[in-house]
Amino acid sequence: MRNVFRATLTTILFFFFAAIAWAQPSAVPASNATSEGQPGFLVIQEDVLIPLIGQPEYYFHMASKDFARGDRIKAAAEIRAGAAMVKFEAARHDATNKTGLEDAAKHLDDLAAGVATGTVKSPKELSDAFFRADVALARHYHQMAEASVAQNQHEKTGYWLEGSADSLDDGAEWSGHKLEAGGKATVNGARSLGRKLEGGAEWTGDEVKKAVSDLGSEIESLGGRT
Image (cartoon, rainbow, N blue to C red; front, side):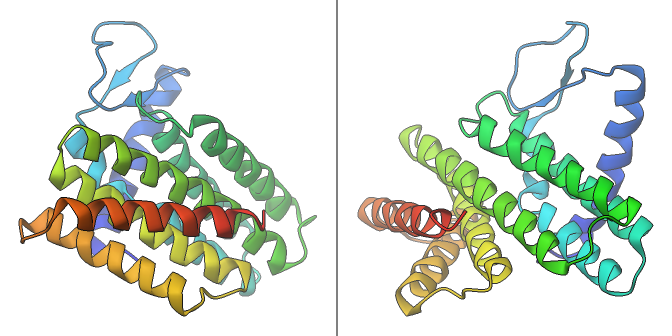
């Protein structure tokens, strides 16, 4: 779970983008895009979006708590906010798991509608949707990490590695099947390495390659349960 600052920033950006979307229905947040001046596009500096990595999970947990309290309307709103965060990631111009993210976001929107109308009765329906979204996000962040490694963008690799590890860990929790010892070690190792890369601590190329490879295997293993 990210800190309060990031949650607050997410909320501010969510309402900012929502306001723009009313004026431009096809607005697309993108990283390093070259669509300035093109109608229907909203170009956002990638550094602005980095704090949003992993933020859908904040809304998933809030929705789960609201649903358990019987507040269907608030839970539905939280799910829609989480779906919007997933859509932000899918809208990155260099996102390679775009289809997986868009499918997960649509599933979340459908879930929100069912929660709001009362047709969704079981918390398992929420857990299943959140699991599916987390797996899609873990794949997305992992693929972004691979691309950053290839481009020698070490700090970005760190952000993506940490985000992928967090999403994998969260997805396992929603699935009801905690990671085994080896998987947990992989997640913790990738998260720790990500922080090293972000902070400029010492690391080796082999260490990064192994972390990326091992994390990818764990994602596919967990993803097989979807």
